[in-house]
Image 1: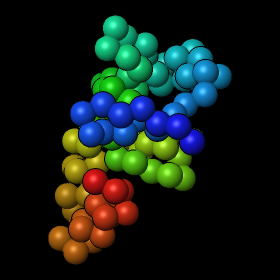
Image 2 (image 1 turned 30 degrees about the vertical axis):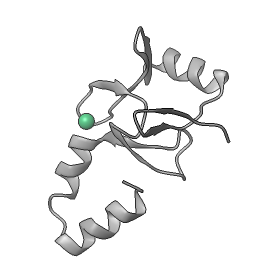
Image 3 (image 1 turned 180 degrees about the horizontal axis):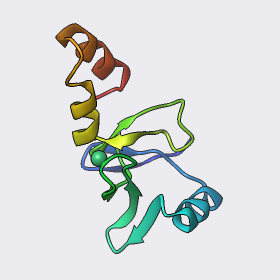
Image 4 (image 1 turned 45 degrees about the vertical axis):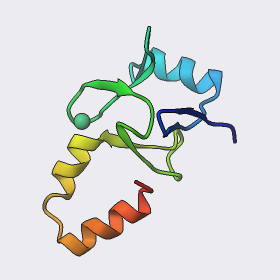
Length: 92
Ligand SMILES: [Zn+2]
C-alpha cells in the first residue's frame, strides 16, 4: 500500500475509483489543496489525512468517519484510561 506524506502526516491511499465514488456521493471534495473529506458529524470538509482524521485500518478509506474535533467530543465522555487506549489504537 502506497501512501503520500505531508508534514509528517500520512494520507491513506485511495484508488481513483474510490475517490470518484466519494466525490459523487459528496463524501469527498477535490480542492486546490488536494482531496478533502466530509465529517459525518459536523458536516465540514477537511484534508483527507491523519492531521485531521484518526487512522482506522478497518475503514475503507483508512480514516475514521469523524474529524479530530468530533472524535474528541464523542470520546470526551470516556474515562482517561479509555481515551488513552483509543488514542494508542488510532496511531496518533
Ligand atoms: Zn467533525
